[in-house]
Image (tube, rainbow, N blue to C red; front, side, top):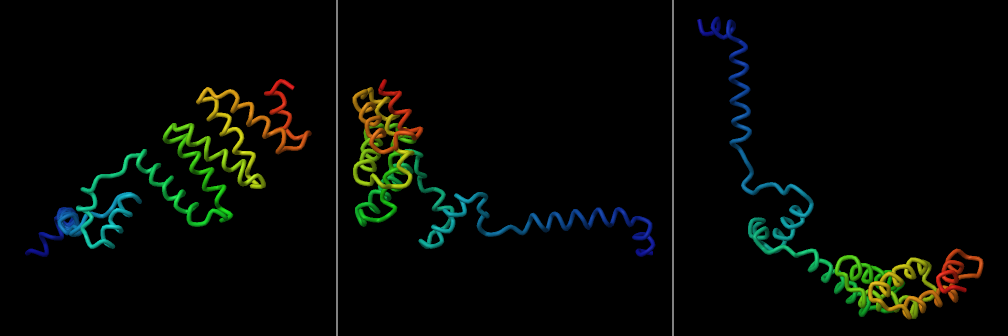
Length: 174
């Protein structure tokens, strides 16, 4: 008799079983919530390494973008101090200059980083990206003699037929 009732109402049985499966799926949840994005995942991994729970790590204050930029600048500075002759030194200075300029709007500090590249690493293969960044810094600082100095440096650094040399000569009115 039960089997006959099940056969007649087989759709109802399937729907009921579906509800049971869905309810069981949602009733069984992990003890810790799963991290949703890579930052949450990193926080959970760091918390696990430190022996604390992800919830405790999530309650810890997060760094502001300014604090993140300052921490990255400090890390680059430490690397430079550890090995100033490293082949990555000009790239680290360039990255520091970019962080100062773009994230912190500290054009004076950015200019110092870019100036160090020009004076200490004149053979760096990516030197051509430094000049426009340094010009931007000097313009933001209203340092027009500094802008002219950069264009003078470009005249010395690039061959006469290069676009960079012609541009610098045009900017200096020559």
